[in-house]
Image (tube, rainbow, N blue to C red; front, side, top):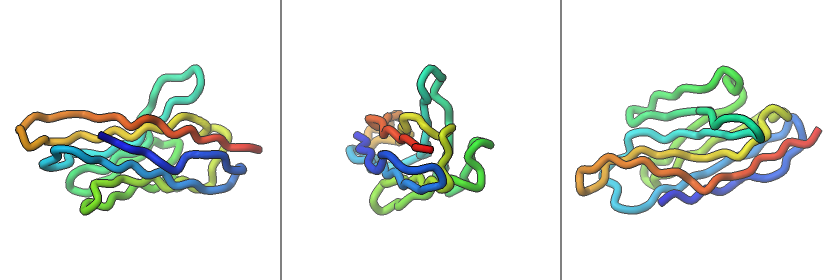
Length: 118
């Protein structure tokens, strides 16, 4: 189960931080991602942090967004700075886990709307 928080309305140039906490029968977390889906567009990968701590970003957010995690809390964060109108979307976390059963599973958060006013 994933629970997201932190979306909302912010002025252009402002900042928001999204959080996503994972819970359940998790043996290990393999990757933690943030996706977004703007109105009328396909869902796109925004940022990823791997099990080893490597990070990747979409070109459109490099230098403005930072993905991080608290492994003790099974929580991933997305710090979004210098927000633009192009960042308006619903943001979803996606977490890949290995469960205690040994199964590999993917979970999605409920979505956090982000609106940027000009």
